[in-house]
Amino acid sequence: MSNCHGPKMNMDPSLHQERKPDWIKVRLPNNPQFWSTKSLITDLKLVTVCEEAQCPNRWECWGQGTATFMIAGEKCTRACGFCAVKTARPDALEEDEPLRVAEATRRMKLRHVVITAVARDDLRDGGAEHFQKTIEAVRAINPGIVIEVLVPDFNDRDWALQMVMDARPHIFNHNLETVERLTPLVRSRAKYHRSLAVLKKAKAMVQGKVATKSGIMLGLGETKEEILTAMDDLRAADVTVLTLGQYLRPTPRHLPVVSYIHPDQFAEYKEIALAKGFRHVASGPLVRSSYHAADFRPELDILEDAEKHFTPVHGLDLQPEHLAMPAAKRDILRTSLLP
Image (cartoon, rainbow, N blue to C red; front, side):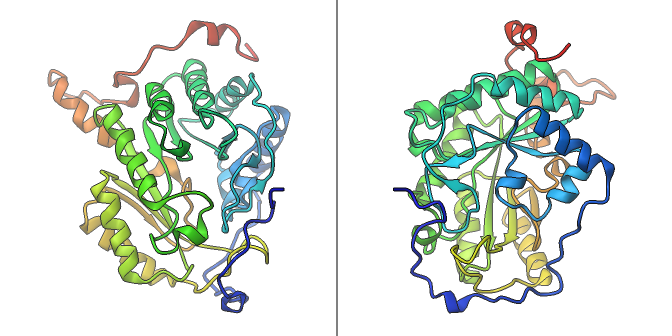
C-alpha cells in the first residue's frame, strides 16, 4: 500500500529546526483578485500545485491573478520526502482537463502559464500525451501566451519526452531538487543523473529552441561544495534558468529542516550561479520553481537565437509568437468551454 505521507526517513528527526527565522514570513491574502482566482479554479474543477504543495507564495501569486496548474490529478505515484502532494493510486485522466486549463488562462488573461503534473508512473507514457494536449489547448484558446511546463522525468523514456517537446513549450522545467548525495533520500524513485539527462535531451529535441530550467531546495543538509557541483552539472546539461529556495517541512512525517539559509547566502549563490553562466537566477528563502515565473522572461533566450533568422528591421520587437510554433488546432477552438 502506498504511504501518503512519504517514505520512511533515515535522517535524524532531531535535526529539525522548529523555530523559523524572522526572514521566513508568509503574507496572508488581502487582494480581492485572490478570491476571484480561487473561485475560478473551483468553478473549472482544476487543481493547482499552489495548494496541493502548500506553496508559501500562493497568497501573493493568486492575488496577482496567476497560478501554476497541476494536471493529471492530485495523487502522485511517488512518495518524495519533501513533497506535500498526496501519494496514492491515481484516478483516470480527465479528457476535458486540457480545455479547462486553457479556459482558465483565457479568463485570467494570462500571458505566462506554468503547467505541471504529478508523477504518473501508472501510465505507460507517464502522462506525456496529457501534457501535449494541454499545451496545444492552451495555445489554441490563448494564442501568444508563454507556456512553461514543469514535468516529471517520464522514467527517461525518450519517446514520451518527445511528445511534450513536439508541442513546443517555450520553457522546459524539470527540478533537480537536491544535490547528488541526498537524492536517494529526498526524491522517491528519481535519479540525479537521469534528471540531468532529461533536461539536456529536451533541449536537443528542439534544436535548442527552448529555455531549460531547474530548481534546487536548500536546507536539507547539503554542503556549499555540493551546491556548486550541482550548478556545474546543470550548466553541463545546457540549463540556463535556475531557482534556489529554502526547504520547508510540510508535516512532521516529512524530511526535517537541517538548516535555514540566510538571505545573504542566497544572494551569494545567485551571484555565483550568474558567474557560472546561468542567464536567469531566482534565489531566496521563499523562492519556488514557479515563483514570479513571468518576471524572468527566459523565452528571450530563444528569441535572441531566432533573430538570426530574421531580416533586420528597425524597431522590430520579436515576441514569443514569432517563434516557429505549431499552428493552433481548430478542432480545439471549436470545443472551447465558453464563447
